[in-house]
Amino acid sequence: DAMVIQNPRYQVTQFGKPVTLSCSQTLNHNVMYWYQQKSSQAPKLLFHYYDKDFNNEADTPDNFQSRRPNTSFCFLDIRSPGLGDAAMYLCATSRELAGNYEQYFGPGTRLTVT
Amino acid sequence: TQLLEQSPQFLSIQEGENLTVYCNSSSVFSSLQWYRQEPGEGPVLLVTVVTGGEVKKLKRLTFQFGDARKDSSLHITAAQPGDTGLYLCAGDDNQGGKLIFGQGTELSVKP
Image (tube, rainbow over all chains, first blue to last red; front, top):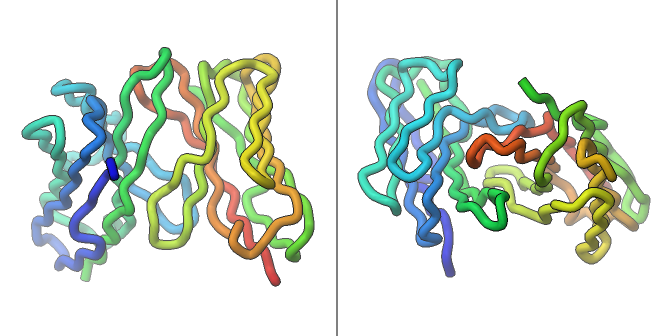
């Protein structure tokens, strides 16, 4: 089945220790997104790629970086995680269909910072 | 900045009751999507509504898009414990794939 895959599902890192979260997709969608979600809140968009074009949200901290080496893969790098970065990180993909975009989410990576 | 106001924020009901969740905005959206998210998982797309006044049904769930495409509702008939989760509405305002999310409705259905 076509899907969005995130690895790992659970990640524990130490305060200040760089960490990378991975996302891959078999949907062949040209748009990929990274969201941060804290408990019972709506997902907060960090950045997205439209094809190879990187779009950073204005309030995304510099501590968060992203790479998209090809259509299928996207990575979220947190350079120096703080305690406040503990959250669920969601990857999503979409493509334009009749002028609209439906987003398909992965299962998420739960990040714990100790 | 466009906002999507979702209400109620929390809802706790008994099995068999009906409920409605609302999403309202002062802005027009080209489409609106509803998601359900279970604890520890990613949101799952339930439906997309595109046309003003459109009504879509998914088993016991009824979704409506307002005539002016500024608001939407989700009605659940005879709720079941399996309906428990976080319900999110998200509007597409033609920003090249970005969605505006509502705050979410945390639904708990007790047996």
